Image (cartoon, rainbow, N blue to C red; front, side, top):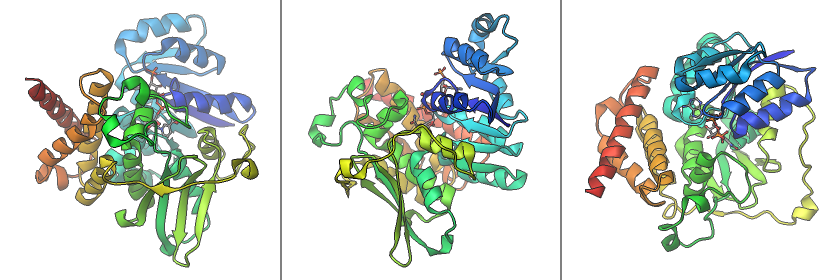
Length: 390
Ligand code: NDP
């Protein structure tokens, strides 16, 4: 029996994880579930899965959670400290699926305890990759990638020698606006940006896919997780979202990973790793697919990809600055304060402002320095938006 904790259980990845777990009660046992504002779903899943603990990130929702769990025997807790404690509990496998920088500390707690961490929260690697990997090396924890591209690379690399790897290619669907001319992007709405052509995901990552910030994060994630050089990482647009990533070797061979656009593949692979279990996924019919197409990810169109290259060149806390600026710009876009293209302009402006500050490029990466850089950057972005409005 594998004992499991799911951080971010009420979200898209959390729900897909639960979907797989409930199918195999003979294999998996749930210890703790965490969520945010969706108390009804958190309590319902905690009860039906027989969890010991349910945690909401919000202190003010503790009484609601207690009420929803009354009589079930499931313990309730609340607050960011309680989420970190949930991550540190004695289990075999932890899913890190909180959205945003808030996912770093609880995932780090799981790694420090030596758990196997299934990592969907890409923000952890972008903001603090070296910290997470160092702690895992020290405790003997295993980190398994859950982002579909990184799971694909991980699978394509199985049994290979990293020394033979020449390049890594990650694919991007191009998101909601891949076929729209640049001029038409200025006035797109939040609703339009929140609809993905191929994948069903949480709202934030869906908008990040449309702006290509998601792919920018994944490029940095690739560098951090697999230890490849930035110039070995390529991005291509692949509208069908069937090939998730490819690994190119020094003999010219390319190992590709193909699958339907369904996150349950990457989650299921991490659940059963190092074995493979049967998964309830569509089997690809290549003849019905007919053709798979690829095109250039034009850097002039996707500023986020260029910014990712700057983050990798800078190192230090540049990833924390980039992520915080991106998260805050997204908050403002969702709230209707700024336009779609303003997001990358503002992130660029914040990054330019932080460049050359030795508390960014040369800083040691710790939870404290990352948290500080995150807070300072969010404030800087808010100030910029206020100044623009005046
Ligand atoms: P969702 O928005 O669907 O879910 C996010 C989860 O995090 C919810 O459980 C939410 O709770 C919880 N949450 C939100 N804010 C906080 C907080 N401050 N503290 C603690 N918990 C919080 O996101 P996704 O499932 O789409 O994505 C999760 C992560 O996985 C992200 O890092 C994303 O980039 C990554 N990822 C997602 C993919 C996908 O297909 N969705 C694919 C690859 C990676 P509540 O809803 O109850 O408020």
